[in-house]
Length: 191
Image (cartoon, rainbow, N blue to C red; front, side, top):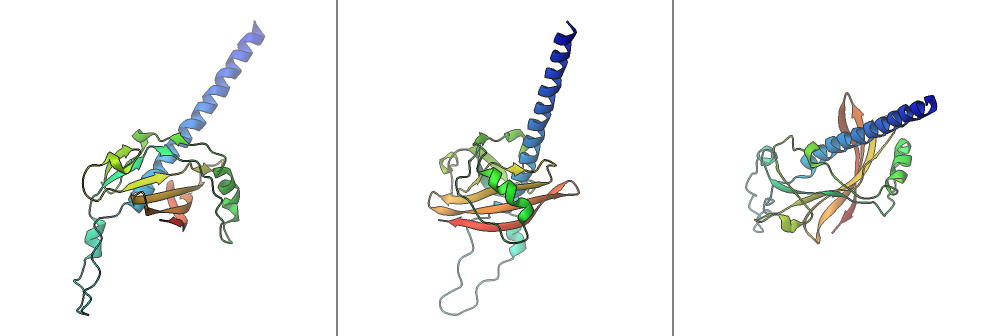
């Protein structure tokens, strides 16, 4: 009987630790995705090019573009990374996380943990067709590889306005004073 109770309590302890780890991962994924949503959202349409006749272009207040709120489709599936991307010198601490990224299978995001701090309207979907209107844009995210302390992370995140018009960036992040910061960003794909 005592062995059974011991085994029972050990099982509960094991599963509660596993559940805590999964919950922590989802919370940190939500924080990082929320940060990158605001990083990737673009006020559209983009300003026109300067006139060809050489006259000065109309002045644009860039700060006003930062205040524009957009409708943004957030892909509900975090994709699996299949391609290896090189890191520059000085980021060796992230190499194991980058290598681990390829081993993580796709999974659904937890929509309840994702928000735009800048007030963008988020539409959770799977394609650009999930938005009806002009200037649709979608952000996608890979799985996120964390270190054991949950203070370093690696992922790919992209933005597209058409199936053949978009880009993908590699992001390295570090948590400082409880907030995630982008410490490195590299464009790895443009279409």
